[in-house]
Structure formats: C-alpha cells, structure tokens
Amino acid sequence: MNEFDIIQRFFDRPIAENRGVRLGIGDDAAVVRVPEGYELVLAMDTLISEVHFPADTPADAIGWKALAVNLSDLAAMGAQPYWATLSLTLPEADEQWLADFAEGFHELATRYDVSLIGGDLCRGPLSITVQAHGLVPVGKAIRRTGARPGDTVYVSGSLGEAGYALTVAAADNAGHGWCRQRLQRPEPRVTAGEALRDLATSAIDVSDGLAGDLGHILTASGVGAEVTVSRLPLSPTLVSAVGLDRAIEYALTAGDDYELCFTAAVVDNDAIEAVAGSTGVAMTAIGRIVEREGLRFDVPLNGGEVQAYRHFS
Ligand code: ADP
Ligand code: MG
Image 1 (spheres, rainbow, N blue to C red):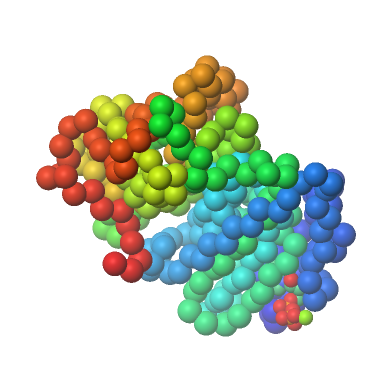
Image 2 (image 1 turned 30 degrees about the horizontal axis):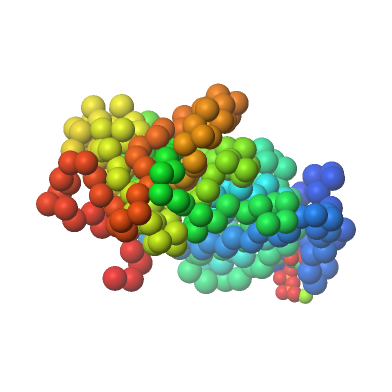
C-alpha cells in the first residue's frame, strides 16, 4: 500500500450532504463554504503515543479520541462541528491498525456529520493531529472571558473516571472496563455545547483536571470562584473503587474527562436544567463566581495544593 492507497481505502469516505464541501480529499486542498452570518471556529490537538495514550491502546480508540478531543474544544466554544482534517504519522502501514483507527474515527465523525476533508500522511513515530472546523453565528462563540460575579459554575456529566483509568491502564489494559471507556472513548459534549451557546457566559472543556481548567476561566475573566466540594459530580463507581478523597483528587487534578465546565447567570438556572433534560447530560451546579480572584473550596483539600496536569512545568 502506498500513501494514496491508504488514503483511498481508509479515509476517503462519502461526504455528508448540506455541509458546504465544494472539494474534499483528492486535490491539493479542500474548499468549503461558510454560510452567510456564520464564522469558522478552529481547534487542533495532537495525540502522541506514550504522552497522550498508552502505546498498547487499541487503534479504534485512538481514532475515536483524536477526533473527540477536538470536538470537545468546539463544544466548549458552542460551535457546531462541520469538517475535520487529519495528519497521521505512522511507523509502518499496518492494514489492521489503519482499519481499526479509521473505524473509530469515522464512527464518531458520522455521529455528528463531520466530514473528513483532507490531511497528511507521513512515516515516523506514531502521532495523530486532527484539526476540527465548526461554525457559530457571528459573534456567538462562548469564550473563557465572560464569567461574572454571581454566575453559577456548572460541570457536565461526571468527573474522575478517565484519570483513574489512566493510572490503572498500564497495569491492566483488559480490566476496568467501566472507567477505560471514559479514557479511550470520551463523549464530546457537542450537543450540550451548542445548546449552551446563548446561555453560558463562559466555558472550557475539562481536559487537564477541573481545578486547572476552571482556573483558566477565572484568570481569563478576572474573577474568582467558590466551589462546594460535596457538589462535585463524582462517578459513584469511582467513589466506591477508590474512596471519596481520591475520587475528589482525580476529579480536580487528573485529565481526560472532556466534560464542559461553564458559568451562567442565576436567572438562567432553569434554562440550564432544560438543556440537561433535552441532551440527557447532567449539568451540576458546583459553586459560584465571586469578585475576589482565585479558586477556593469550602473544605481544605490536600493541604491546599491542587495542581493541574502540565506538559511543561
Ligand atoms: P501533497 O502531495 O500536497 O502532500 P498529499 O499526498 O498529502 O498531498 O494528499 C493528497 C490528498 O489526500 C489531499 O487532498 C490531502 O488532503 C488528502 N490526505 C492526505 N492524507 C490524508 C489523511 N490522513 N486523511 C485524509 N485525507 C488525507
Ligand atoms: Mg499537493
């Protein structure tokens, strides 16, 4: 298989209709139409073997996750995903690996009508870069800067399982199915993100632990937050597996949950409830935004030190 065979066999798929794709895979570049009144929202994330996933992660999970982490970024902006490009660096052209990778990628892409419209293919150490492209009505993207004192702080879904799965993955890739799924096939909150577009005053996706990611909102908005620890949406399975204290630690400091953390005005509490009802994704109020900068918890945690995941420190 040369690179053109690989692209044709595994990546060139029928393009979803009504996505404005004038030219997809096959030319020097793709051409898409941005409808009047909308603007493009672009997100890019790279997954590197042994940095972002254990080397023995199944290829279908890598394909899924490479797209999922990007759709999660679009969700945090309130954008509707339309297109994606994929840059794949592979040590060898392993047909089974490619088939599995493509299956995972296309499964998630199909769910949200995301068209793969181009990419690149190289030989080298395993690395996957996806850029996802979405649309929002002009000026409507949810930013990190809009949190205001008095706003409620929310988290979608539940936290901590993916971080726990990462710590047990090396020892036991076959077991721990209940949390491994959260690590390998995170569910980007695409529909919820879009529904929150006119409600959330700020948003971020939780990829590096809630404490650090909420911290980004606080810094960008120039505000602080008071969080009630007992309100954190911890997975009950996680709590029974590792105990409450460690579950809290995973939720606050481990990465890979891909939930949304966002703020909204108190008057919109009912509307947020309605979004939870219509999307089937829990939206838990965990605290409130205050004027005094910094993130504070109602009970002391770990001697007060809460550290997010960092590539460079
Ligand atoms: P170039 O010669 O400009 O580098 P390529 O051979 O990389 O072009 O790509 C040929 C076509 O295949 C282009 O349309 C490109 O976007 C697409 N493509 C290349 N790699 C991938 C990939 N991994 N997934 C999807 N499309 C790809
Ligand atoms: Mg070219």
